[in-house]
Image (cartoon, rainbow, N blue to C red; front, top):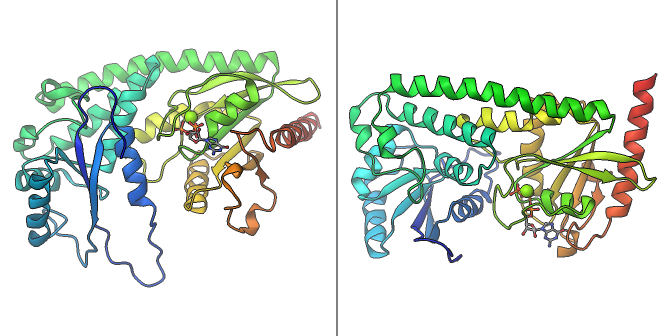
Amino acid sequence: MQEIKQGKSENAWLVWAPRRQRAGKRQRPDLLKELEALVKAAGGTILGSQTNMLKVEHPGTVIGKGVIELLKATVEENEIDVVVFQNLLRPKQQLNLEQELGVKVLDRREVILDIFAQRARTREGKLQVELAQLSFKSGRLVGTRKDLSRLGGGIGTRGPGEKKLEEDRRKIRTIMKQIEEELTVVRRTRTLHYERRKEVGYPVVAIVGYTNAGKSTLFNRMTGAEVFVADQLFATLDPTARKLRLPSGNEAILVDTVGFIHELPTELRQAFLATLEGIGEADLLLHVVDGSSDAAEANVQSVEMILNELAFTDKPSLLVLNKCDLGAVFPGNSDWADAYTVSARSGDGIDTLLEAIERELSAHHAERQI
Ligand SMILES: Nc1nc2c(ncn2[C@@H]2O[C@H](COP(=O)(O)OP(=O)(O)OP(=O)(O)O)[C@@H](O)[C@H]2O)c(=O)[nH]1
Ligand SMILES: [Mg+2]
């Protein structure tokens, strides 16, 4: 269990209530582990978790009366401040659960929103998160005005706050419109930056991949930069670019990006995709995977789905299996025969990867000249 260094950390209890699987459909066993990592990244202290297989979801409260009773006892016994559901909760369900349990109830989306709110550094990032939070809150205002009495924002006291919560939807919409306008201006400036870089003629290589795969570590290892690296989800939010020196002495631009995640909240989708817009300029993608993770294959699939959505699947890309220093834990996936195995931490395999990058870029460049 992680001790939080600053401020008071909230005690969290996790609940995962998946529907019992139909035959043949695989449950992702790592989802609860991922929720744990998300709650820790948001600054919560996890006191425990429970999994309740459901035959059917209870429309008002997700879990049934009996389970709620037991959960309430657990909450009181362990002085839990917040109960976090892996399930996505509808506003009414969230409200009902908070009333039943007497503590704050969040779902996975709200935790991710909370992390983004804490991590955003650039003007663009902050505006996007604010927009996502407002959109989430305005969704919660639909229907009963009682929603306004919800027990509070995310983990800790972040989020738009109670004052904003009390604003009616019209006011929220006006603010959202203002933010959108400001975002358009900020984005235009960013596009100009990318265009200017393009003008200089450097090829662009973008690192993409699931959160915590080791993208920033690889970025630092290859460019000598010191981008923030942490064993937490979404350590990187804003894209960073540095010059990359290739083995022949040629140069390229390397871009580090925000980590991908399974089931990204819809409110954050726009922010997330906008952050990745820059990848559209890339000549080559490095898809970095934590090859030591049990969820490596599932994570590769999640990333590929998003790349698909961004219509980036035609881009040349190299699959990079990272963290090979943690042992021979890579599954024998035949699709991965062409992958590059590296350790961003020890530097193993990096020279070979750099050579491959150079080869790909020159092949691609030759193609463009035809
Ligand atoms: N053992 C080992 N650990 C690594 C390696 N590369 C990265 N890590 C660790 O993995 C964790 C995540 O690394 P980051 O570089 O922050 O990962 P990221 O993909 O940038 O993560 P986000 O920005 O949060 O999406 C850190 O604790 C790193 O020290 C590696 O090759 N081997
Ligand atoms: Mg990172």
